[in-house]
Amino acid sequence: MTENRPRLQAGLAPEVFSEYYYLKAELQEFCQEQGLAKSGSKADLNQRITRYLRTGERLASNSSEKKVFREEYLTLDSLIEQGIVFSEKHRAFFKSELGDTFVFKVAFQNWIKENAGKTYREAIAIYPEIAAKNRKKLIHSLRTIRIFVIFLRITEEDHCKRGSPAGNTKKHCRAVINIMHRI
Image 1 (cartoon, one colour):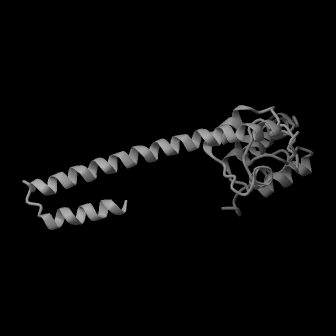
Image 2: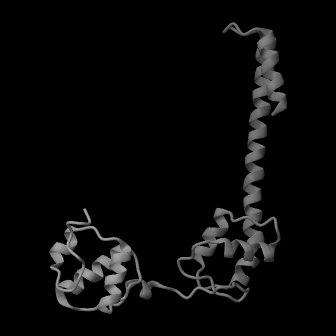
Image 3: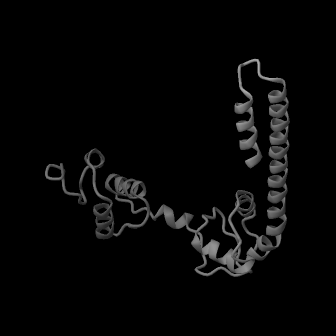
């Protein structure tokens, strides 16, 4: 396929360019040769090159407009960035501030995403409240499960005492009760 395709060079018709597949490295090399921005996704490069071949216009990189300064090291006074993508850098920062038991919970991640522009100090301050809400939900869920298991035990024990119309034997009932006691 690569032998028959035209070489990517200035003067190539944009229609011909768009008919062929070029590697990202080839697109970047062409951009560098022509003085075009070579950063961005492959789709960005294709768009930039097509426009250049059609008009001769050199477009700036779209990705440079979208880029947000991201600090290499986080501090308590660092601002939460817009469109944050959680990384090991974030996890390490929160573990160092909140202790080794820190885990990223969805509720906390959502709070951070919704509060871009606030400081990490504010995120640290709100974390205990969010974690406590999660614990309360978990405790409520566990209580609900425990109540349900108790109900099942009572129902099974009662069912075993009266005998089962479905033909379950007392031996079977005792086995079910033993399993339920392990829960």
